[in-house]
Image (cartoon, rainbow, N blue to C red):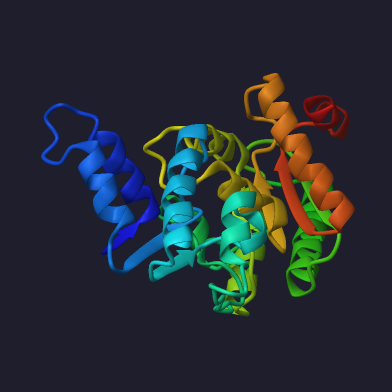
Length: 271
């Protein structure tokens, strides 16, 4: 019996419906007693008390019954629920095989919503704009060279401040494209959209868990946070951004921020 974890939970929920072809108890028993169960994408589910209870019931039953089970987890085993992790690390019954990847796909490629950013490179960035004053042109050239140096060896933090349309996002995206060309990891997020996605993970329909998305952003080897300051200034938003920034600062992870606000205004956003 093969099924992904999110699909399993969706089918269990739908089985409560009176119009369901298979009643909840019958379907759950079918999965629980399958001669061989392959449970894919463990860790992609939304983490709610109900979800934790169902997974615990399923895996605890199969563990105690010593039924053949294959589990594909998309998160490190250390991030699994305590009871599940205890079962999976039992040396008398379980074998763990770690399939090594350099980095997650999310950190290596642009999402479909970033078609414009995919075309933004250092080669097509024009810092010699004729409509600029000499001082402005010199400042833009310096920003260009700083971004290029950072792309070659990301270390520390780089913050681009300026009015809309001055080239902040282009330089930030060019850094990402440079790293991708070198087959190196980077993650580009638009801060307001990231917070919206983070909220959406609380929905039962979400295919990505809150913990999974937040961890990817928080621990990305190189993170670009575009449009910082454009997000809603709610306590929840400030808390999440503070957690990301504080973690990355303490871990000394390379970070690029673009914003049209001053440093003081940015600090007020996260304090």
